[in-house]
Image (cartoon, rainbow, N blue to C red; front, side, top):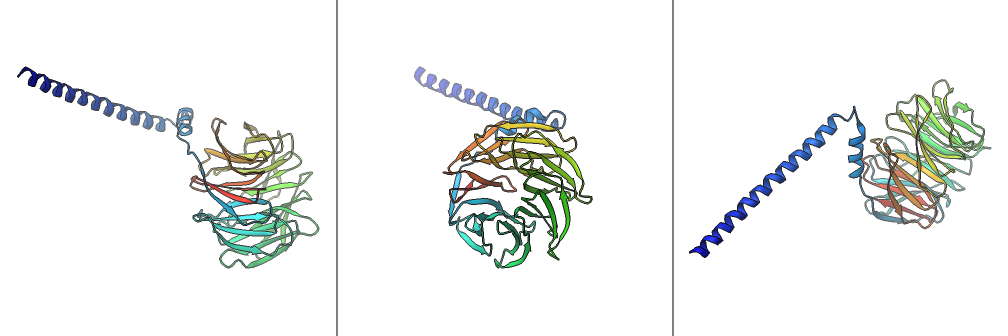
Length: 351
């Protein structure tokens, strides 16, 4: 009888202990969510705690696909607006479209007679603009792969080209240090921006359609008023040629990358450097903000891709897999996937 009671007592004690543990767990969960909600409410007053929490839970990327097909270096890569297709440009003179679910090549766009440096989708995803060392800029229909228009740049070489957000204009940069705005309808240059003293490496429209930004081998970044073609700001700080530049989604900041191996974040209104990201061991070839402005992704001749926390400047992750310089990188709108291009001739998807 006493033995039976002792077992019964142990059962009661175990149940009581389990109930206490359950209460503690419930209290912990409630306190955690209260803490999280409190941080969220005070985000505007003090962003540091919330940003640290976001950084702690930052997505970890791993390699998903390796796409092969180009016969030479792949110079650049970009997601379509819906994130389902990737466009790539190469020294083999072709532009190729890839299905990101299967990793299979969908279409080859042929027409350029020399290497293709850049290829970019229009905002609606229906067109692609490309530029080449053959001194032409070409517009392509995505569905058919047909060349719609050829813009002649002779005698200069266009080093970059991009559609405006309404797809009515194209901004191009070139080796003669001049930025040109083209009418898609007429195929003619309607505006020129002059002020750089060396090759212009990249040009981008602001999201509000009011500004243009450019990077150059002259080590500077210029912000231009799109209507007047006047320079608003000149950002100085890089010690070697600037290879890439982009506006943040709210147009308040700019990120740049350079041959000096650094990435820099700038305030558009003041023109001042906000933060410097250091870690790459060679030229930083391309850089981009995520759509929520919280992460920066970069690639380099050191064969790595890296993600960075914007608020702290801390490196979040380093991807390795390419066997040669990584030439281009792009992050999807939802921030879930990254695509990269390389001189090893491959395109890689990370997610």
